[in-house]
Length: 487
Image (cartoon, rainbow, N blue to C red; front, side):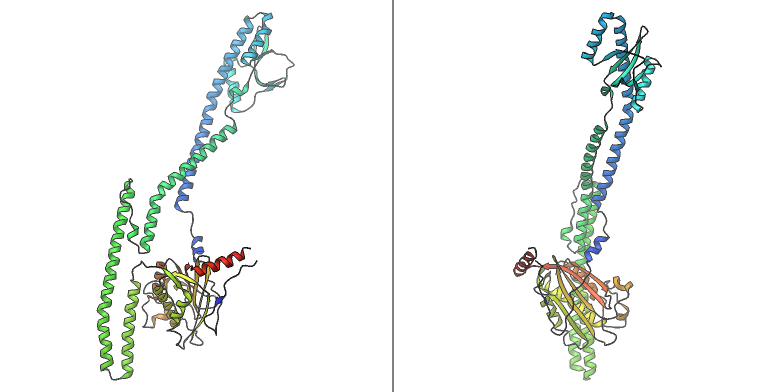
């Protein structure tokens, strides 16, 4: 069954717009993220430990070959010497019994040598060559050594007794080095232990950095109280960093508090004479045109002061469930009477966001003011503004777009810089260069994302991503339609 979506709520009966196609800002940011510090440290430590373990295993493998070959050759030479002595001093009738006893008790087989014997020489591996060289050194250079006689496998060593040649066979497996399977088990065990050790060390190393990163993010959001680090850690270097960071945040909090108090005082001190000037202007200036201009200038000064206060507002705010459609309707009340602006809306029904009700109105109003001021069409002189919003999983994508000339690409990133004003704004005297900076700062304080881009068909797009709010009605709607879509 096809998944059902809620119908869009069109708040303007005369004009509609397509749903927003805002780019996924978080996805673009993730494309620039590499491995985090934990995994980078883990991989480097694991590589170091595994490489060291393999080097040690290879070193031990090389070092144990020659001692093992010498030990094996000495043992075989001793057995050959004892066997030669036993054969030499035993009676001919007792030789068969002697050979049988040696085979049953010591797994040593002594058989007479014959010119017709089929002999397979010893292998060419390092251990076999070392054993053959050591036996030749101890028993004589002409001592035959083979790994098979008459198709019988084993370690065969020839010796002579009274001009008769014999073969001594022993089990070669007792002299072999560790097999490849044994080395593989050792290597796998070492690898697992190395990975566990690397994970533990990486976590131990990165824990202070993770705490510092979290505290820095809290400072960025203006929450200085939740950014304190532990000043009693054992490691002296980390303790000094934590102490320095805490002192820095305390100083920043004091600076932020002093700035807020200073700006509040400035606002109070300036607004009192401005109100007095406005009253005196309305009472004493007889020229109606001049009086209107003077009142407009006073209102503009009051608005500039308000902008400064908005930008300097503290970082903490409480988020509530807010209906986005109602917020847009409230913000549009002051713009609908303007002849130089027209609006298109496409907002999903029952769309709620988690935001501060007053601040989200400031955001929408600032964006509408910016669009009305700088987004007018060169042909008509009218600013056509599209306002659209749609839900995407647990977030809401909002777009406010004008159809003006847009902004030069090199200036896009500077538009949210405090006091920066684009080319079209520098000739106007009614802006402070704080509008978009306030918008970005407020959205970040609410845990959202903000991006400015040029539309492909012209105009500036403000893309906003905020946390979606869920009401009881919304939850029932989602369960109904999402559940139907899964059938």
